[in-house]
Image (cartoon, rainbow, N blue to C red; front, side):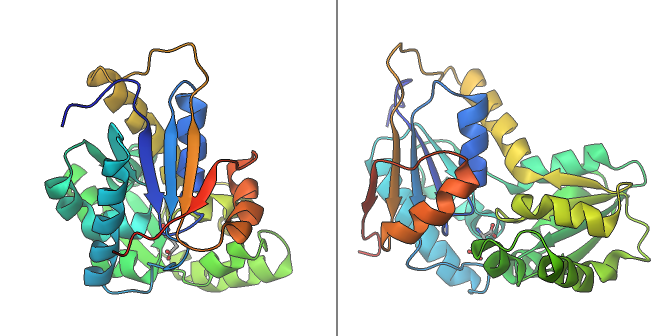
Length: 270
Ligand code: DGL
């Protein structure tokens, strides 16, 4: 399949969290059209087995490729951690995940070479971030902690206040004696909790946001492959969800920082 410059970029996540990555794409590549798919009927991926996450991811990749995308962004950390190699094998268009950009940025940010990583149960259990960072720097010490309550907390909009701080303190206590200088936010949702995370960790710890790093990587790949959109016409931004759009719109507009229009419910499960 020949990718066309003016084709959109496909982005998917298990739900609304990947909008933090879409926001970055829109910010660094404002001329690009995008199709975002949130698998809201089957979220969360972070508590599911690897086989299930890969099956869901392949169904979505197939759907987006059919829409004529030129590049596929796996914005979900869990899907990136578990399924990226399989998706790459099956996809006729280039595929970018969030793990490698995040791992690179964390290595770059850490002078002590002691890095903490937080994510969903499935992401942390996979050790994918650990492997990615060790590949970049054998000497790095990585300390990982799953924080499963963060996703529902953020989905409820409880991104500040006592409860958020208490839960964060409970999880992040693990890092207290680890002497880390960098904390990698290995989940789409966590950038929204940044103020609470830095309050709990203290301002000497650098928080690395994989959404920002992935945005930079996408821009680099688009440029290197000569796939930049060249058009004066405003790019199209389309959304698909696998469950009712209402909740996605309500919570998603807060993630994206702008109105969500052009949204349709679809069935990707066959
Ligand atoms: N998108 C998921 C991730 O980044 C978080 C939500 C879920 O568990 O599906 O890992």
